[in-house]
Length: 433
Image (cartoon, rainbow, N blue to C red; front, side, top):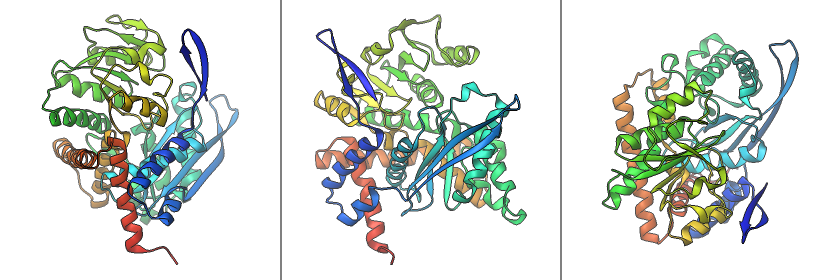
């Protein structure tokens, strides 16, 4: 991938590292910090299993298309693989590798009995009808069926997938199991609709977790969120809910960017007004009447107190990090800041709440759903939110305290905690044979 940077009005092209290079550099930095055992470093530097499936699907017009899907299982030392499935043109095996590794660190940091996995299909879902997406999803599930399972690998929603996608996966998977095993495999995926074994509050859990980490950071500095300004890149599930809860706390959204364009209003953009507008406008914020358009490349330079990248990876790089005005970045997306971009930000004194902490509310709620299904229970919204806040607060305090004690940035501190937990499991168990 090549990005463009202007220096003295001259354009300079600078190649960016891939996501795998970024996650490995982050990992190795933390591994050096904790003197990770060399053998365990070797194990954690590679993935356990990589699955590529090609499968045919009949389209609405009767023609057959071939799709390619991926599932990467990074490490399961702490428990079953856990991670989302995304439908996006950028999905490939390298992206799945990086995202699976990030999931391993995320689940470990959160103290969950999971490892890391990730996958998806390389498609633009907007180009397919709902019935075509259902057939694509069911056929993909059938192709993956022997490599997922409620005690082996548990997918969840991610970019461009949702509760409906998970319901199709669960139904397809259970339909291919013997009758006696069907009920026991309801938790093969999490993020299902509440009426089909899902968890109340799972839809907002990731965004709520992003909000909580921002709130915890301000509280740790004896500050309030009231009248603080924020911008959001990506106004999907995560970006919307993070903005929703920040606004409730008294903060003001002043800029938003989605796949269609970027808007700004220094006086504030009402979250619900924009959400309702995008729903009526095919998901796009273009021409939202209460804001004006800004150039895509100028978005990160908007004046604000908090920047929330909640879209895709590699959005903040060495080519635009110097533009960011916000003193606090809360990573709602996975891997939105590359290593070189982070160096620029840290040198400028910007604080980054790292993705494996900031957006971990989703996988924590997935764990709650998995437990609910496993135990045949039904949890209420208030119980879910209360448990989620306690778990997020525990993780935040651990990372914050470790960073202060060791003189580290928050990402390195989070990685050190996560990797040390996995190292301990290997040391206690040993390596078979």
